[in-house]
Length: 173
Length: 461
Image 1 (cartoon, chains in turn purple, red):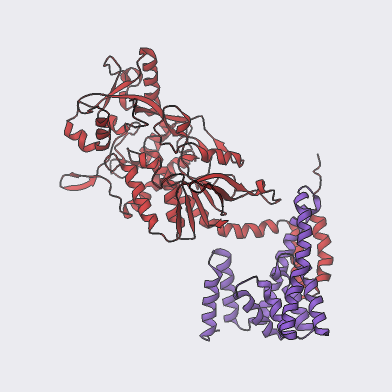
Image 2 (cartoon, rainbow over the protein chains, first blue to last red):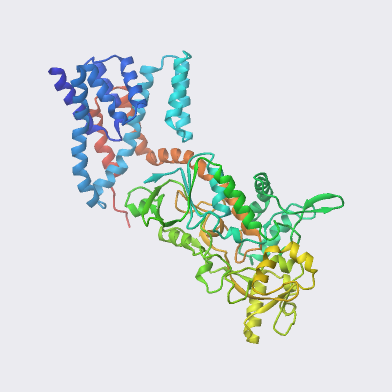
């Protein structure tokens, strides 16, 4: 029961803090679920991250897998609801206000001011994920290559993921 | 909403060439009002001006273009388009287009036509149906591409821009609303690279050589989106449009004069000699103005283009299309002069672009007749427009593909422009990534800082 409450509080609060999408709260998610509650190990976190990215659907579904690791099916369901509900309610009310607030300085400040924060948070996520998955130069090389491919081309992620997956499957990493 | 990597509006030489090049890098939608081949390109009889013979040179082509343009051409643009021409022509030939050849001293070489304003023979042609052959070649090749969707009977209604949607970001083109003429539905096509290749605006005038689709809607859409337009006052009038009550916009190619056709007034006089030493082969604007003056002076409805000095066999061989059409209207051009009037023919100005077809609205490109690159100046040199379409389409495709890269870099740069946002970015990265502070703590520190930084301040007057 205690775990369920923890799941609900953790993901509920992360839901409201996830400016710039799910990836920007990954460091916090990692810090709490691995470091604080020990629901899963560093490597398991990297695995569920990869699965949630590769599986269809929004990548924030990583919380379902973390919740499942922590407290089984119920934990998974609860984490999913917790991560969706507060943000959904918030978005509903903000949308009402946003449309009418075209000239509002707050809207302008949020759109402009949070952009650098989001980029910083996503980079922090990349850094932490890199640290927990990449343990030798070949892995760093692959991470770097994939990054370059995504920056400079519009290649379908599925193709890159499949190729990287194949490389891993063949045991080259 | 349908999304494409590139959306091209218009299916003439520029639009199709762009689509073929872009298709190697992503999905492409080609939006066209009627059938794919219902374009001004398909009506082009003359050909493509391009330096291919040893007697000719890039410098001569440049100076001819500059002279026709009445001092308003951008010389750097002219030089570039002229110099890159041969490469693009070669690509067109590789797609299977066979330009007319002739036999000289036992070897075959391109049969180059001579047209008004050109100091050398340099117009590549396929009889007098060059445009139709180009259109067919490009459409055939397009049909082989799996990444390209040709949306026929789809009319672009308006461009979608960030400013129109009320986004606080920098303005850019995001897509286009398109009317499906069969169902009557307006569809939304999303693409961060929109290419206007909609041609000119001949239909604005009573007499025009253009097909019904040339209504100038590309310029209108761009204007509504706040894009810069230039030189729209320079509309080129073709001096010789067939004058016949039943003929609709039928052009008698400049090549007829190039091959020896002479303009005569209703008294049979070779009146052009009075207006210009080059006579009937003077540049179009001079000929059109002279015919206009002659018609007004004499009160006649038209003037006459006489090529009866050439053998009937040569005429039928070199101008089969013009010959047959005139014959249908009861005029045998090998025996009698063709009645002609000037008609709106080409829009020299248009949407202002750089040499890569980029407009001042990020994400929006304009190529072909709809654009104003600076090649034509105040007056287009005959057969330079197909060349411009080919060359600029190629450059625009390269620029649009590279936009993916610049956009990633630009977005980063825009978010992180100046010391304050870079500090905010580093702070959020270090606190969360390296020191692993709780997100709430980090946000409580940098959140108010970023809002303070981004809060709109009144500009000091």
